[in-house]
Image (cartoon, rainbow, N blue to C red; front, side):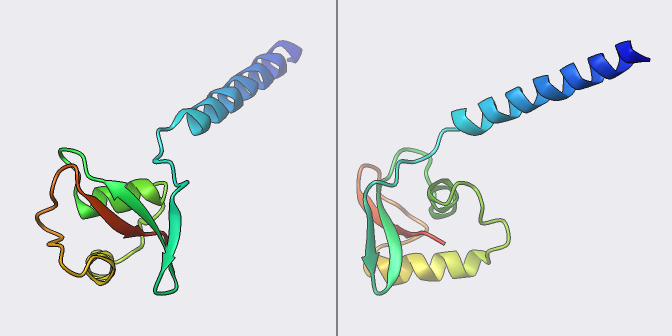
Length: 100
């Protein structure tokens, strides 16, 4: 019985280490350029090929916006970037994205 307990504890410890490693190694967008516009915290992001408003918003919020309404994300983006089309982002151009 002691052998099973030891194996279980070792497995739990190993899973804990793997979990911590994954959390620390997840790629995230650096948010050292956080500003405030209209009372909302925002980050200025340079658009790369394949980026969308939703994908960048998820990235700057560390993929924690599961419960947000997509329409709210789009309307917040439009409010922060008055003359930008949220459905046609320009590559290598900077846009402001809200931090929720």
